[in-house]
Amino acid sequence: MSWLPWVYVAALVVMSVYGLNMLLMTALSAGLWLAARRRPLTRPRAARDWPTVLVQLPLYNERYVVERLIDAAAAMDYPPDRLHIQVLDDSTDDTAALARARVAYHRARGLTITYQHRQRRSDYKAGALAAGLLAAESELVAIFDADFVPGCDFLRRTVPVVQADPRLALVQTRWEHLNADYDMLTRAEALALDAYFGGEQFVRSRLGLLMNFNGSGGVWRRAAIEDAGGWQGDTLAEDLDLSYRAQLRGWRLVYLPGVTAPAELPTSITAFKRQQFRWAKGSFQVLRKLGGQLLAAPISPVRKLEGLLHLTGYLPHALMVVTLVLSLPVVLLFHGQTAMHWSVLGAAGFGPILLGVVAQAGLRRDWPRRVIYYPALILVGIGLALTSAHAAWQAFFGPASEFLRTPKTPPGPGASAYAMPLDWTTWGESFLAFYALVTGMLALELAPALAPMAFIYVLGFGATAALGFWQSDHLRQRKAARQTAR
Image (cartoon, rainbow, N blue to C red; front, side):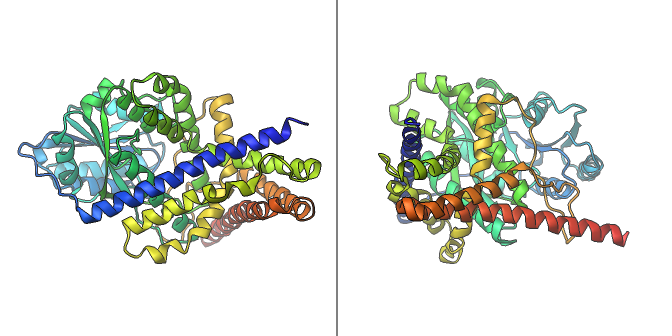
């Protein structure tokens, strides 16, 4: 067992590297936000000749939001002879009928809007987007997922930015939140997304580091999509995949924090975990696919390093599970006496938290009211570690998996037709919470320095599991009430 403490130490060292990188991102983000406030950005001039734009709306079983999405796209302020809206529907339920009806309504009003339905979901979202490009001509392509509600001025504010730089492949906008105040979980999700968009994405864009399209709320130059090899469905992160292929071909990507694309946040922990699993596994799949090309690319070592840290951003979550599992034998066999233990993370562990606070201060005037919910984000973030560990294992050693969309919430108090049951991760989180509790109790006597982090893990895994059980029971009660009413 002499190898065990060294594996434990190696996991902690890697986690510390990511934490320190978050501290660096925090410092850079703070400086960039201060500079932006001293020198406000000027908006690009309106284009003289507006380019043709194809707005793609990929769908799969979205009965609760499909009409809202199509209506929002139809309301965009853009020259109608330059705009083509394309509904790409792979649905197998009544979403198809709802989408056809809205398309027919807006076509009767004179809009150029088409409906495209596929019988087979080959390559999932990537396949739908690729099929849509084959059916329409355009210079630029805007993409919105089903849970988004783009503003009417979205294209007016983004298209001139793309048009001004012939080597600019993509303009990505900031995701805003339609239901951030729904409950504690959505508040935590909103904080996490704000930390990403107001911190890491902001820094990567401004400093010319490798960044990514986030799958929605962006405008692509069609020539860049085609030059990079088009949409490919061999990963669960087709957006990240195309982004890196385009940048490795010499194209630029830019992020506009001042332009927002409002979207709906998952309201159940099971839906949120499904989303995070897809994002995590997709990121690791892109690393497998493009990691060698990234290392061999003629770009600076700093860009390469930050690109690797970006593609492996979910690794620290997976390593949380590794360190927790190893902590009990470390306590029992070595009394915590290793070359390094949890306490050495120290300031590095605060990197993600500080980055989130700086991002909130940069994005929102009422940031003090929002950051008080950070404890909820910390607990959920720890609780999702098992999901990320599972995603990492699946990406490198598991089979290819289906692209599972994030279920949406119906309006009103009714139960969702897309509601997800409990999965094995909820029971796994319960076990890890108990395991961490045993570790913490033993550490109090044998290795006191390890006890605080063990108890934090108890709270994180325990809270996530408890939320899963509570929401599952609440869903069961709502279904029973609906059946009784019928």
